[in-house]
Amino acid sequence: MSLGALSKPAPSGVTEPSARIGLTAPSAVTAGVALALGAALILGGCVAGASNAPSAGGSGEPTAPAAGGTPTTTTTEWGAIWDSLPPAFPVYPGSEPVQATTGPASATLVVPDTVRAAIDWWQTGLGGAGYRTAAVSGPLEDGGMVIDATGSGDCRIQVSVAPTGATTIASILYGAGCPFG
Image 1: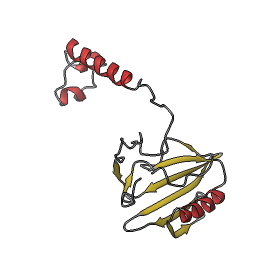
Image 2 (image 1 turned 180 degrees about the vertical axis):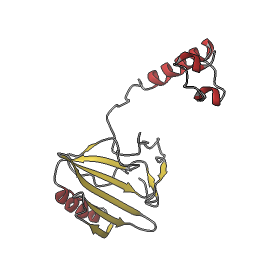
Image 3 (image 1 turned 90 degrees about the vertical axis):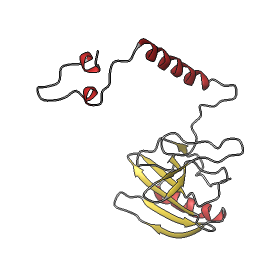
């Protein structure tokens, strides 16, 4: 039985997507394997000491460093970035991680302050962490501001802060040329 038989018939002259790529209905064995894999993934998260607390970072699901390892990277239009922030990176006090909505980021945070206050804090915080401010842009059309900073070698950082409704959102790109650790 094709998957097309499980849904409404296609309008005349339109080929069902499943027929175009040769899919058929899953067998009971395939369904059983899928259920077993799903259960293993769900139960795999129930490990003593595991935390469901959100972390600051990433495009989609942030990648936490493995023991002794580093997170993965993502290539963006801006360049390659780490998928999370290193522990020593300055994070605005009281900020909370949120799911990225504007594309990949090392971290996307709700900041409990104004755009200007957050930009001023990050400019000072980045300087205190050894990074140099290359440029501060804004205010932009959306009321946001951007800090471009550099570190040693090929290290580049961009902190974009913008108002979104009643909240302030910061999106941080921590370049893959920066040290992680």
